[in-house]
Length: 208
Ligand code: MD3
Ligand code: FE
Image 1: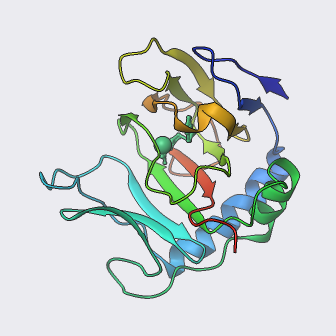
Image 2: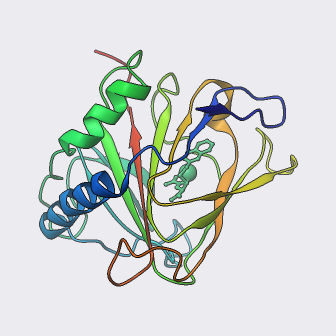
């Protein structure tokens, strides 16, 4: 476990290779099952309607969605109207391992990056509580990840996220600006069609 200070912020920990290949394959299977029930869809930006390059789905009681109206958490899939599938056991176990002080996770956002997809610099602030960390799992191709400070123009640090890596964003780092610059094609054999999956586990509402 590595605690990486960033612009004086504490609370970012990096756990490279947390999941071994066998665990990554099992996790992929669980995500495949979830996505069969709650298909990936292409979200659009609020106001402009510009499509994201990343496709998304969720599991858990709440899912993060974006459409012309705005960003929000909601209990059902925006296309099918059905409830999101449960968060896989292996991911609940991860949360217990790295975020056991926090209440149970309510949302697991599934981001799928095909070659060329990226995610601009942003903060995660649609949750009603920032007390719990965000826990991220990377699967498939390696990504170049960028983290800055609490202000958009703060200097940023880049590092690579590989398949099986876990990042825990807690403490002050919870509200740091971050983004994905690029996905490096052909860097993993995990996903048969290539690309990258990122899973983020979140607590959305204050503990009951
Ligand atoms: C640093 N996803 O879904 S996960 C997102 O790889 C998102 O798909 C990226 O940003 C991805 O919102 C990055 C790692 C991550 C998540 C939350 C953070 C890094 C963070 C919050 C604060 C600082
Ligand atoms: Fe984010």
